[in-house]
Image (cartoon, rainbow, N blue to C red; front, side, top):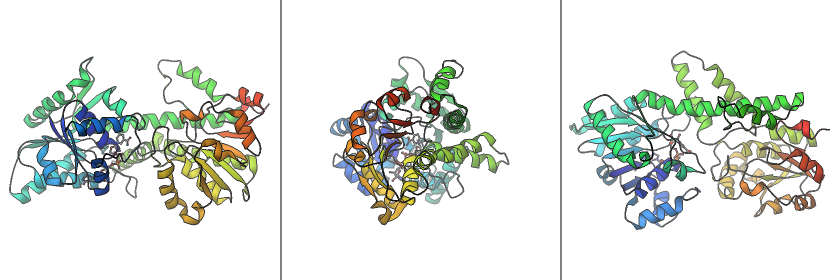
Length: 455
Ligand code: NAD
């Protein structure tokens, strides 16, 4: 099938590359000329396992094209995916300016039947606004080609995006119950048929329910994280081990094991903004979402947990002290620094006068860019970007772990001890066994596990 993807970011690029991998003829459009040039020169703008190979293979096969040419891109696909960003507006609601600009681009150039597929995460009712924006452009041109807007929210996870896209747990598609909505359904069914060979994974519903489903999913996942973080802080006080508790409750099939890890708070481009956006939607309808307000507040507080633990151990004034930080990206296998808890920690350490040596396997370049914005160049100069995790440790008072990269799971603890000024690990992801740390003579501070190390 001929497909156009508007917005070539995490979601758009992965969607375009994976649909091309299945034999479709895909045009990826973006307004960012540098990104398109990079892709056309064989580069990849983001770190995502497996993506580079899929992009290279399909470009070489002539099935995947990157362009800034709006008219040519819109002319190409019968299916027009909108996969542009929906960042939070000042009041927390989803900023739809990019989605509506994409819709207008389609309206300005389309001829003949098109299915507009909202893949961006958008508030309930956005499909109607997309349709209205297209209609306005068509009216200005004095033409009336048929079109319909479907909602097909994306559930991929950064760090496993290609795998998630190629093996989805579910595909959610919302369409109108009109002749063009039914026609869109048939096209979407054809497009996703390769994913449904083993068993049917598609959930068909109305457009508003599909839009809502994406927010409900992210809100539920964020809730589980904040729930465990809040209980972990209590576990520290009452003398219980949150990891034992996690196993104890996760074994109940009604609860399950996923997304129950206590840590340093959630970040990324989705959970923070989507929780805010659904709260904002609720407020527009004069409803409070009390649970989600608490989820957000708990998460903001949890992003300070590592800073609090450093201060509890080393005091309020950190001038003259050096710390090593492992992990900058908001989660492993990505270089995405959006809303990353590491940014809160680094700000706090630097503001208290410390110097810091950091290491991340892939996010260092992106981290330099965002930390320059967060801290300014003067303060950024107090952060050293170390080529290896071990280099970062030399002369540091303690190692603070923020992101659970695989490479940090079984380090050489003797080397860590030898390099640190004193053997202290403050672990925001509960990577190590407290008993092992004690036996190695390492002072260990996890999240919700102090009962195992305070004896
Ligand atoms: P992103 O910022 O990585 O990419 C968006 C791209 O759209 C950018 O390259 C930008 O230049 C381009 N763009 C903006 N306006 C445009 C226009 N008018 N025409 C063409 N291109 C335009 O964003 P992302 O992380 O891919 O997220 C996209 C959407 O998908 C968001 O709504 C997000 O919430 C949702 N989503 C993201 C993820 C994720 O893990 N990143 C997962 C599921 C859903």
